[in-house]
Image (cartoon, rainbow, N blue to C red; front, top):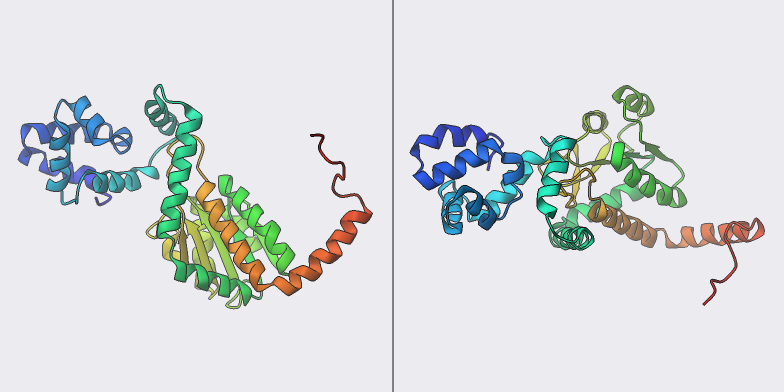
Amino acid sequence: MSEDILSILQAKLHTFSKGQRAIAKFILEAYDKTAFMTASKLGKLVGVSESTVVRFAVELGYDGYPSMQKAMQEMVLNRLTSVQRMGVTNDRIGDQDVVSMVLHEDIDRLRQTADTLDREAFQKSVQALMGARRIYVLGVRSTSALANFLGYYLNYMFDNVHVITASGIGEIFEKLVGIGAEDVVVAFSFPRYSTSIIKGAQFCRSVGARVIGITNSAVSPLADSCDYVLAAKSDMVSLVDSLVAPMSVVNALVVALAAQKQQTLAKTFDTLERVWEEYNVYEKRMERL
């Protein structure tokens, strides 16, 4: 479903059957919640059968209801305010066990990410990072956690790593001064997409730097400014963004890079172990059984 689906439904409203018109009106009035309903639930709320809802999706050109639902979710994710997210979450939870619901949904996101992640883009991202003069990692707001985590491990492997988590576009540009074609940028952005990250990625690409985007979709606003896109599912509609799958992609990058830098890392950690031991960096007491 294209981004102007609401306009399409409005324009075609008079051509629908009575049941289809009821579905269309419901979507128009509550698209933020409808996108996350099952066909069965939508049918019950509208007063039509589940099969009518499925046929409606096919009528609009989809393979079935799941395809329409997925397209609607992609359309609305970046439009939802924090208040709307909380409302959708409360409706979805109902009487369910919150822990089970969240953990199972995260497991499903991991599975989907594993199945769909572009392996060629992943390998090229690793190669680009290995050959970079400087590495910049961009992430603001909730994705600053991902940026700092990746930056922490990259600093063990590379000498010139810059983690940028400033939210202001002016400050981001100030820290990107001097970036060039020999540099590589890793940028994080998920719904609701940060304008500063997207503009920062655009600037980096414009001066010849290679940009690796870790985002939720190959068609996200960030993807247009990236050489390589690593798409990780992060579609939890709540006040809290699900960063489980993106974090796993980050882990995979670190593991792949560590394998390439094995000899260098072995020397680095051999030195660090002696320092940690001398200065009692880590607790030595064993936990009591």
